[in-house]
Structure formats: structure tokens, C-alpha cells
Image 1 (cartoon, rainbow, N blue to C red):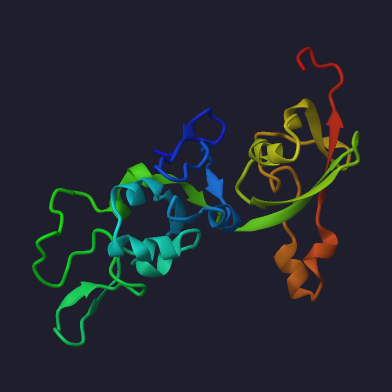
Image 2 (image 1 turned 90 degrees about the horizontal axis):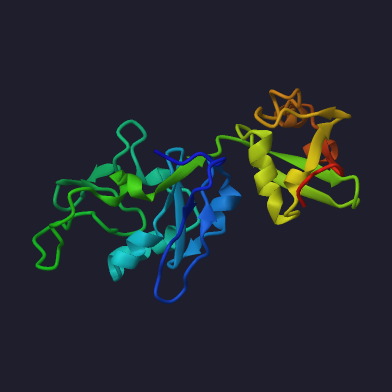
Length: 236
């Protein structure tokens, strides 16, 4: 089970050379979130609506079978899989006439060889694509952009967020811009937002597709959230 973003749960990928920082698990990740992890020492991928950290896998396995996964780091590889079964796609090999796993970027870890190989490991009962240890959250089905304006500092920041995220989860995204984001009341048009609800549930309808249909640039109509500093806090 994937940890909820509101819980203080952390994951950490370990590699001898380049050790990524620990990170808080989220319920949803955007394509931009995944794209930030695009190396052998920090490898995330998404497929079939889920996001996986494959860094530990690459720590265990090196060599040519790891290369297709390294090349795919930071991207969506749903085209590798059958959406109905969740298993890798298969095809009929044109020379052997046998069914085998379809590997568009070359054979990768846990894909069996066409013939006997002395170095083929047989001690893994679950292939990495079926191993829940690597699952860290869901891929955002859709994203939207919002602008956040701090009325005390006049700072403005643009955020791309998952439409299914609550305002509290968006607040946690905003921590990279303001470590004291929780010390503010978040409002839209002067009305406090319910932090446990999504933007849509707070009355902030996503009109991006409608604007595009009407030939209007959505970037000219990005909704704004205002932050009001709570100066009566008992804790700094």
C-alpha cells in the first residue's frame, strides 16, 4: 500500500556513488515530478497510472540488461505493458516464430533470454514490474496550473499540481518556495479554502480544456490563491 502524502513517511534510494536525498512519499506525481529522477542513481518511471522508484533495482543489477531502464529513467513506459494484464507486452519473434516479451528499447532486467544462458538468475520469484516494493504513488491523471501569491511578501509562484490533490497536498508542494507555508491561511477570492478538499471541491473549476476549445490561451486565465500570514500563531 502506498503511503498517504499527509503521513510523515520517507523513502530513500541508496547507491554507492550518487545517493539521492530522502523524500516524502506523495499520493500523486506529475510527469514533471518523475522527469526530475532521470539517472541510474535516481531512477523513477511511471506506467499504467503508477509511479515507481527503480533506483534500488539498478543498485542490485548492472550490465546491459539495466541499460534500457536507465534510458527510460524519468519517463512514462506504459507502452512497454499490456494495460489489461499489467504484464509486459508480447509479440511473435519474426525469426523463431515464438512468443516473447516485446522490448522496444532492448531486453531489460527480468526478461528471460530466448535460449539458455548460464548467467541468467533464477532466484527471483517476482519480476520488478510486479514488485510492490518499488511503488511510490500514482501518476497524475491530469494536471493544472495555479498561481500562489503571498500577500505579506508579495512573492508570486506558479505551480503545476495534480487535479486530485487536496489543498493540503498542494501546500506541501509549495514548501520548496516557502518553508512556512503552513503558517498562512490559504484563500481564494477572500474565502478560506478547505485544506482537505481538492481545488475543484473548493469551487475552483479547471477550465483549461474549455479555454482551449474556445481558442483562449489558458495561461492568460490561471486561478490565483492568496496566502494570508497567521500572525497569532503560538509557535514560530
